[in-house]
Image (cartoon, rainbow, N blue to C red):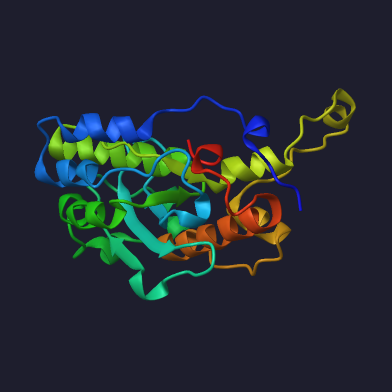
Length: 241
């Protein structure tokens, strides 16, 4: 087993616990204030002592300022178990039209979302479930930017939190720069998409672009990554960003 230590994963570290403390002292709407008051695990907390929560968001596009969230899935887990009974999945009514290209990806149509709740109702349910957990995602830009933008629209204040990005970990573990000769031969970088990453650990294929299924797939992927490449006592500062 390859144990990757802090010296091999050195990256700029953000002081998330202090950020939470500072935000909790600010005048914020109740959902955000409660979220920050719940606190954040310290950077040196071992990953096997950290409550984890896999999160996935499906959207109408990739631009958080122009597109909208249409579904959210989450599932709590640790390195030994995934707590399926505590899983949650929401459809959201977007405040802008669906695009044909996004419908092809996530399969949700206007009729599917016609009776779905507004984003504010769902976010008020979501934040308590995220509180005190370390969020795990595959490609952090989507979850971070869309939730930050949604919070800004609803409460005029951004939402920010640390995440473990399984895509980022997979790139760190397996992607190596291609030589000039490899590029000239048309060789492509190793895929770190969710399905391709799972296949490297012989995890089963799942339906893609369903928020809850992708959250489950991400939880299983992190379990496999830790099992194969990290020590269970690895501090979260070596994994989060």
